[in-house]
Image (tube, rainbow, N blue to C red; front, side, top):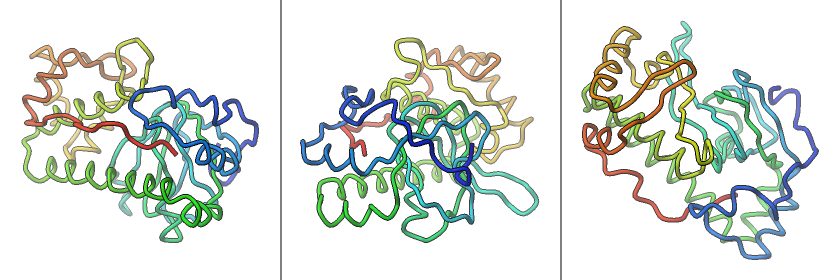
Length: 252
């Protein structure tokens, strides 16, 4: 299901019973904020693995918060080459760029089945006008995304291939663990080596050789369906990365 097919309006999860809110990573809402978000939310959208959520160049009437599942943001060159910009996980707000700039400057695809909370873009002005706390939350989320992109740019520009791969996997693992992906089970990152190559700007052959080095050091294990992290501390040490280092974050 894509943006053009429209959202399903049925609600499996009322905002008051959102499964993400009890997680310690997310800040609590004031009662009036929760009441507004409940009216702001128009339904939920189920997206199949591999389907487009948002498409570069298109206008979107909706914003989305990821309720469950994995996705990624990317841009395409005219010849089909792909640059993955970041990975989408529960609690992430997507589609804000289309609300501000009129059309999307990147695409979003589902890595697994996704469940999204759907918000009407036209209601965003009411949020900024009447709920400055929520408006700050959206600004915080945008600033956080900028910080993540800064770190990714550092990887592409200055880290070695081994450091890039170690950082990427440690980063994804840390974010996924914080938002409870896979529940109490070890996080299984549902990416292929092609996804890694398209994120790091490396050839598939170079990516394979680099990931093998991490496997030989017993830092990760690559199996069908993705990557399992064995030693996140070891990955962070190779990357020279101190970790997320953030306290509680907003959830819109």
